[in-house]
Image (tube, rainbow over all chains, first blue to last red; front, top):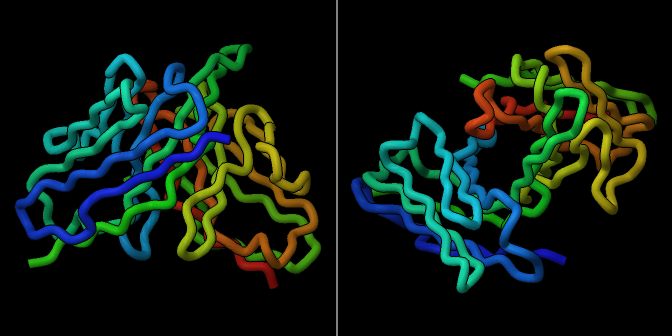
Length: 125
Length: 108
């Protein structure tokens, strides 16, 4: 049973850099997209970005200038850094395992089947 | 703004059937996945692919797709199904993930 355990600083001041790490236990690291998602208080889910085992990344264009996702395959861990945070970055941040595959008949499927418990990050002066 | 559109709220009487929909151009190429989120908890995958349920998800949950619309159907809704539901797919380029705005399901 794959589990994701995430950790990182929960209280930041404006302009600081958010840093979170997610460790993968009990499964293969390759073949998946390791993802970060966030949820501001009372709002919906926002996809932040993803990385595969070889280090190829995709980012949400709205955050791309401030986001870096990296991977350490030797430790089965991946990390999120978000620079120059403001109060608008206050949210619960989740890590998740994503999969994209060909479904056939011209379709693909994409889903995130394993999620971390979430880390609450508050940005306040 | 989200590239996937969901109704903000839906209600259903206990034991009845409810359909939650998600619209977006990328759904013509990607099957939507659906997540259930209860207050204070991480989202849980309930439907993926054409109509697949992860282990442990009750068979009253089903999915379907037609054109640019994906649907999550709960047949015989239970009180424990009251939650927020999010659809998820890739954007039209396939280069990033996107979520719908979420639907709050109330079981009456």
